[in-house]
Length: 266
Length: 308
Ligand SMILES: Cc1ncc(C[n+]2csc(CCOP(=O)(O)OP(=O)(O)O)c2C)c(N)n1
Ligand SMILES: [Mg+2]
Image (cartoon, each protein chain N blue to C red):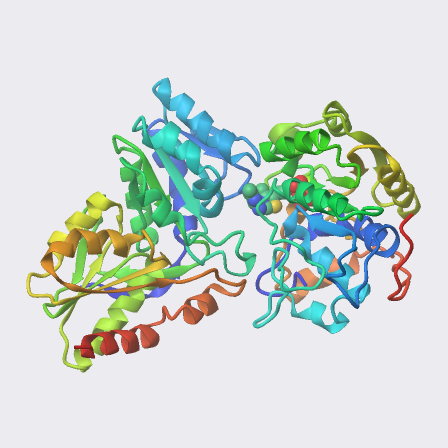
């Protein structure tokens, strides 16, 4: 996907792969055959520049034809740099950072109003993104609304666009900040599928809003770029660059497809 | 008379290259918001406040309050739209010497999509009293106008593009607030803002000449109401038609200002710009789909001239 003329946000997409797999293949109650199913769990990609990873996940999960992934940012494609709402499974036009949690407050509230066991909203936020004040307004709103069907997943890969988060504007310790806002907070290895699954289950059961703070590696799985600031946005527009990245891809296990059924709400 | 040159260059890159020296010379604090458009450089006071556009605008205003000129750099979609209230209250209202820079202006965000397109920026900035709203026509003008913004005694907004855009030969040094006639003509006036659009206007003027119309072309590199009055005065006395062209929503953009400045002259006006939200796509495709290419504009203008 990054090989086209538009390049792509590789680092923040790769750091979130396991998080997306855990959500879309295990935790979330969704139906690829009916992406707008009223009782669905909702996913908001607040760090909208990681849409590449979301599209790939949606393709593996059956929301989007697999072949379409190769059209990323090619003429006529629906798959744009930031999440495009024309794509089934993309709920909001995100990409202006700091705003996904506010939207998630709204969907989670509406889900609670719908009656019965409410569906859940999951929102994925970047660690650089936490510098936007609007994140914290929304965090406080979630607590005030006692949004117990709302889970924020934070991708703490340590880097933003221009460098290490620690050096640009340090927000550590991230988990303490969420806890300080009155959120149930848990920290987890964001590349460990089993641990992620458990953490998400716990977050869903917890009273009030919950944050799953994920320790991740930017550009995880791409050896030559792993943990490097330069991975934020890459354009692999020559054979040499592409070959170098391909050659360094780790042997990450592919997700096992669970088919199109609706897994139970755990 | 100006002509589109064969080479292309990015106004954003030209700005980034020129900024360290100009900022140091005029003692300007540069505030960045994790965009990477500006690089720290020795001799330049540079603060990267992270992804915090509102905090950046407030910080710049606070520093200016203590006597420091400042520049805030981010994407147009985030500087102008997200931080609008603080640009209004902190910068425009007290007439602070702060330059707000918006990169990825207009549709130049392309595939980055609606979150990163900024077709509202000219209307929003034009709505603010005291604000000078500047859109360089090419990379050379970007450097010159940046220098002028950094010396201007009040607030300025500088809209830049993203990737390479047209460059013009024979375009004189711009002067902030003063429109440039780049092609004389007396039947109708084509007033254009921004690189791609000025190139389109020049091509449309050639097409109109072939159809027997003598079109004046004006480069409106400053588009706020005060500058628009100057454009109004620059429009040739005999012109019976006004065509304004811009890569922006036409509500409140450059054209609306120029038309209101010219209203009393009873001139007929065709606004050409962007209508509606743009989908993601290449910059070129978005301009084409918006009818902003020379062929499409020429057809519209000829229809307009034909109308009784
Ligand atoms: C409001 C806003 N400001 C700036 C940007 C430009 N931008 C895109 S990604 C990015 C860095 C994001 O860092 P982080 O949240 O840590 O994401 P990740 O590391 O997961 O890619 C920036 C500054 C933006 N998209 N939105
Ligand atoms: Mg990050």
